[in-house]
Length: 423
Image (cartoon, rainbow, N blue to C red; front, side, top):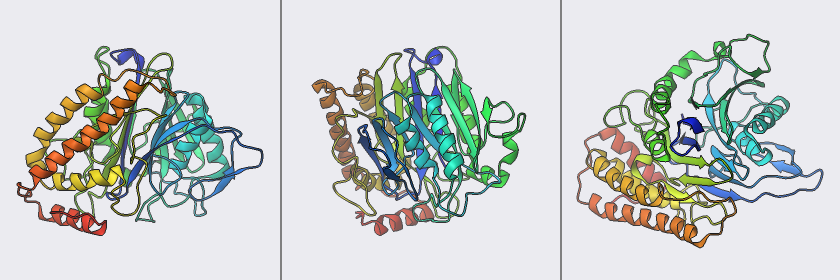
């Protein structure tokens, strides 16, 4: 379960384009942030995706990717040309093919590596989709979990939404704003499709799985907050939307929270394991912010530069690893989540103050920027964020856990399985 949205230049404070996504996955699946330079390849080289080999492109673009550590593809990312892209699980009456193919996360990375514009990325996906189809497990521990995909792609001129069903697709373009979740949004009003003219793409939705995903409530929450009310939207607003909880603490009911918290192994199984916000100016500047950890309501967004990535955010693995930024944050986050009623508001106050200094003041920079001031700002942001969590971890030792027995047992078992010591 995920949520992705984008806001165009007419609605933003600076005439920029803003993309944001939460990646909701299994709760102990480490998500890494990697920067991969563009490359040229000789003819007839093959590329190993998550499950199949395909021909490599003659050249690829430099990319920053947020991805599950074990998958070749990515949940979300950006390339050096200013194309930003993320995918969503989409539940339709058409099921994934039984033979291995490309999964949605592979298609995200392939679109970013091979495209110069949002429409180019959509064309890359459609051609690969029709040739190789969608197939293969998408879950980390749950190898029965597979799905169709929708994509939101943004550049400096437009927002493209693409929804798929098997090898078929529908595409719609936006100039103002758009949001996708785990349900279809395109009906008969598509701009381009593999289906006959006038086909209602929403008619192919799986209503039970879509309802269970809670996507309608989450998308409505996002749409209400990104709908234009003057040119006031900024990256701080994107951060707050990704932290959204629908009333009180996010542990009860169906999956209606944009900031998703796993609470037990049956209904509340998904957890926000990583978050990305990207802002593009009107020329060639970037501002890229990641949590590099789970639960954006319990950690800061931090600026990164593609050419100078902070240590440890590209490290994951199957169990706790001291070298992994994601796992170090997770050791704090589990402790905080079991005391959320006491921690949430005072911690969020400090997080917002942190972001006022390290995110909202971060200037736009070029993809290859080697500006020493910006590099220091990014490194210090990660250091200060870790120090903030270390300070809170000491304070948590004196706090009683909230009285939520099933929830707390679930997280204690998760911590034990992954080698995290809870004091």
